[in-house]
Amino acid sequence: MAPSAITPQSSPRLVAAPIANVISPKYNHWRADLQKDGFAVVKGAIPKERAVQYQEDAYAWLKSFGTDLDLNNPDTWIKQNLPVQSKINTFHSYCVAHEKFMWDARMESGVLDAFALLWGTDELLASFDSLNITLPNRKDVPRKAAWEHIDQSPLRRGLHCVQGILNLSPSGPEDGGLVVYPGSHALNDEFFDNNTDQSTWTSLDRYLFEEDQLAWFRARGIAPLKVCAEVGDLILWDSRTVHYGAEPSEKSEQIRTVIYTAYTPARLASPEQLALKAQAFENYGGTTHWPHDNVVPRDTKTYLEDGTRDPKDRDRPLTLPERSDKLLKLAGVKHY
Picture 1 (cartoon, rainbow, N blue to C red):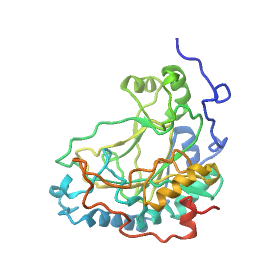
Picture 2: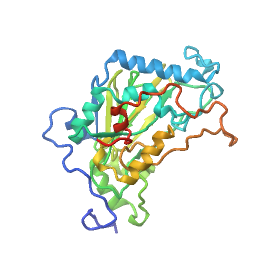
Picture 3: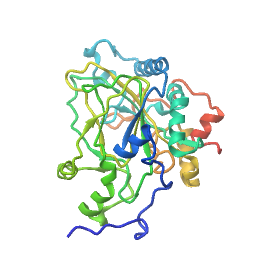
Picture 4: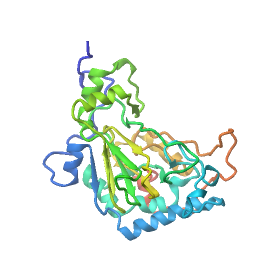
């Protein structure tokens, strides 16, 4: 027998959405897309010329480690010429989360205005998230399989977090980029209540789906969609939306360059979470996609496969950002 449906009111373990009616069918622009499909594209959130400059800054950072990397020569796109990456083509070590170009991009007015409109406040916290530079069709690594997941625990009900991608490169159908299952966010509660064992739920804001579980969504008309976007666009998605980062196809020659970033109202953060956030900031460390909660500082040191620290590791960003009043408030170091 399937488990009975439960609500935050009927179980003390469940956590209701912190703000009701953040997105509504009454909207007639990207917020309507976010409500209906679980994702949206905000066009031109960053002016194209500045987005292009941020990409150049990202390239300069990538080439700053003194290797033979040549972005015009795919033969040099090998592990020995690259900083240590995670399994999903992202860089979150080497203090990159706090490089000046990363903060400058995060503080773009078009980006902040979109999240302020979404949450109904401009008193926001920013996540200390990663840089993704995907070099297409590398010869030294196998292609990565899809890894459909959500970034919200089944214990959380309703909208808690909206994630973002700052697109610094074109993302066409063949290029690497975000794949979403439109509408899956609306089935989140039904899926977990009727297809999983509630005793196995944890507070971890990550859930990976098995193939038979994805078939449950597909049987309800939910199919994967590659999100296409242009330079300077902001891609948003509900953390309950099933998604993954897709590898570029063999036809693509586009180097994917994106910054992951999210914002939530500062008032949602507890003193304990703010303390963790401030500590991560002072250590130039990264955290998760979540700005106000689930603040899990990543290890600030970078290790090679043999367990030794990377001799190219850094204890501070290559180029420090200006610690402006605006930045310190977004970082959670200074109160609004």
